[in-house]
Figure 1 (cartoon, each protein chain N blue to C red):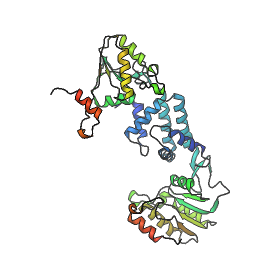
Figure 2: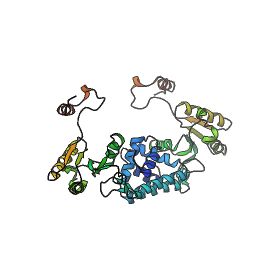
Figure 3: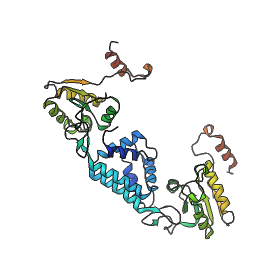
Figure 4: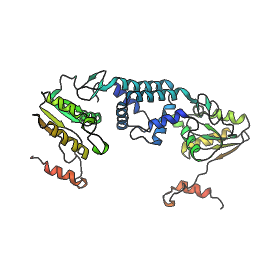
Length: 199
Length: 199
């Protein structure tokens, strides 16, 4: 395609592996990079490497830990007796951004998906069980998405934690704020009905 | 946002500078990177740096040159007496992909845009003039986009090359293949009419 630019082609192919990046977007990104001053590209390259080196997963909760310190587990102001189970760091950041939640987290490495060969041992639910069994946990909040895989994973964890005496809750399902009732799908509408609250 | 992850935030901010990448896409890309094995990130980081180091601009035509060699100027099979003037490497690659063009190129560093303070000296038109004046050039093909800036730049180059005896052409304007006539804008339709050919 680009006649003898092995490096260029290799970089485009590499960028195409990024989520949501296709052939054209990858080209755009690479051409943008090549038009930058070399020092600025070196800085980016260094930042990427540093991030991969310094940001690891917290042994306790699976959250990112920069230089070995996970900011949730390391924060003495956060309530460690409440654990919110999320599917990924993306969801954790979404909750952190908006909810004012002041408890701890448990970040799974994805959701159960037998069709893709992803079992309980792949997503780290046993670590959650050990953590809850170790005591001092009053509530586990299941914050997995209301999808087939999310529900299946929640059901699995529910059964796993059944022998342990701990309160297990899940996020409310219902109408998204600002929604137009006529456009809401039947299942959500049903869930909103089921979960109606006195006002 | 991500509580104490300076590296993470810095990387997201950096990715947001890429063309067409917003806050959410940048987060997605960074989280994808952090879930990769460290070796694979190191490889990407290295590829980026190498590309910036090894891919420079050709002294003659402004095309990318890997390890000092521009593949167009270095190709003895290409006709150096025809120069196709393009706005960017993106456009050059588009032409290379599709047109079967076997001449040389001249890659400008953008288009004239007095509103943004971009003048002739910024986009390297003088190099083009020197190249054409040096002789042995039979035809200059203007392949800048039919936009205001593109037309202005073409007009400027036309005037610049007026004293030199050289044939100057531009790409045909007209209906894109597969187009539905009723949806074509008036200016394009007019250009198609003007440029009609006997069959």
